[in-house]
Structures are given as structure tokens and as C-alpha cells.
Length: 146
Image (cartoon, rainbow, N blue to C red; front, side):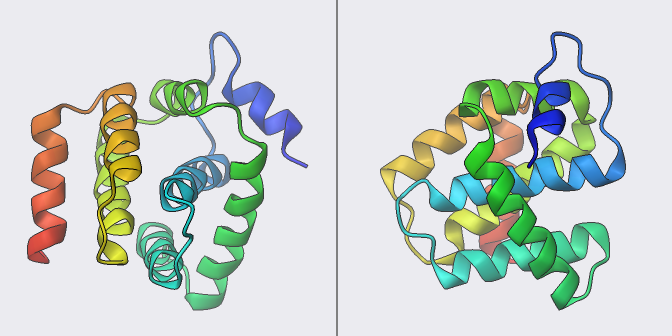
């Protein structure tokens, strides 16, 4: 279903993503982080919907529909390293930083921070070109509700 999109995203010299493609890529990475621990919890799903709704100005139905598409894309996407590097090459720094913040919101949504999620977050943040300090600040903003 997303074969052409994934080929373009992982091409040797990817072009900046169009808005619809960026929505899918960023949402798929949120789904990937939520699925990492093997428990795709309702709280994480709700957090993904909320993040997509805020980021892309979608109502609840639109956010849920986009998330459903992102779930399919995530299952078809290449390994996390290639997928994340492709996003880094195709999405601007501010959008990647906002993605890290949304990812922390998903990780913390179910009230459990496990080793798999922490490990994936460290790897993805680095691959996205976000510093540890920026990631830490994003996590604190989410933890403190600011």
C-alpha cells in the first residue's frame, strides 16, 4: 500500500516530504514507539491521536483515521534506523523536535517507562539529529505538563 512512499522516503537523496507524506511518516514513528514494548495501550493510542490532532489541526475522527493509516505504514516501514534517518533527511529540525516531544508523550502516556522504550528513544533521538539535552528538555516539558 505504501511501497512508493517508502521507496521515495528511503531513496539515497530523499526530497523534502509533502505535508500528507510528513503526516504519515511522523505518525508512523509515534506508532512504532508505542508498539516497542509489545503493549500498544489505549492510553498510547489516545496520545497519538491527540498529538496528530494538535499537530495537523484534525478533529478526533480525522486524527483516528490518520493514525490508522500510520499503523499500516509502520508495519510496512523498514527498520527503525533507515526509517528514522529518512525522516531526518526529509523533515526540518523544528518538526523533528516537536516529534520527539510527541514521542515522549506517547512513552509516558501509559504511566510505564520500560527499557525497550527508553532504548528506542535514545536511538531515535540521535538518528533524528536531536541532542540529548533537547530530548531531556522535551521529556521534562511533557512530564511537567508545559
